Image 1: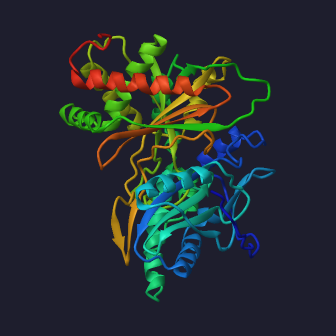
Image 2: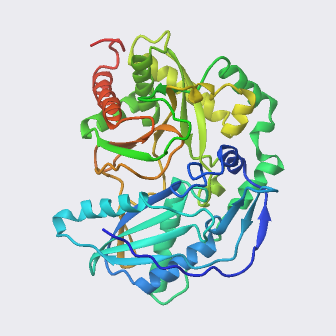
Length: 458
């Protein structure tokens, strides 16, 4: 399906200059000035929601203006040349493309996924404001899918849910002919200033010492690739999507409750066992994503807060999965209580990422998606909103990730353990990715079926 676009002009001069956050500084360090880095055209987030009810298109346009005015991060450009800083612009109108989607009721879920995949395979400009656009695909007068596209330098996955929550409330108000009445929004610049004004735990000698001791001699997980990196690789990210079924989801939650752990800890423990079986390593440092929002006042803010936290799991003395979960739980809790930005961790452990740059190896990051603002099924005004979380369609080109692999798992409230594995196509084949997820499913079935059994059994 083709997607038409119209461009609204930007207005106004630069409004402000703010120092970069630590996360933004890390993006600049990773930037090589090409299209394969964090400021490239495919480094974006695409999320979708089904809308049931009468959507007022003009009210939706006005609501998009409202959220761009409300959240400065959506109109902020990161200046990388010369003095690095955030440059905050006045509000401008984001694109809204409205189109009619074909297909009968039985195929609408697939059509919605196809739309999201097409948008993810497209591009976004990190210098074109605002850094948000929307596509409304209508099946009929009361059934539609709304897709939001934002550049990842401006938002994280949590932020996308905040934006949609605010957007649908603004739409309800505009459709009713009233002004939106939302509480004042905390801005990303406040988070940046807190980091600069002593709220950054990297200033603590005990925190720095914790990471030096915890990661001494360790290296971030790097898995074998299918081929060596070329001198100038043609970089693109593919996404393989899968579902493990309701039995594994229920077993994960039961095990978490029984062992006083979170589902994340149980799934991370299983992944650590998979790494042991795959590489032979008994001491693994697994990079994991965290929300990076350590204070409640930033829970409703929009920006790039997410952090990559390395969790070291030592399997040498673990005999059963019960042992592995206990080890993972203890390590994770200590890591969370000492969390600082990854850039600060690397400053204390300079060799942490060294193996990810070795030819024949690439980084692998593990994530369990846990976003509190996700709208599962919520009526706001005349519209019922349901987040599209369960995706079944893989895609050969999608939103970019850093070089390597990104494994994302999520417990679907509707039942099931769903996931997606992003992989660099210049390094990995689809067959390898499928094999990895198949081994994980089989391992989870065995470990959760009998957590007291030896981890190296059957």
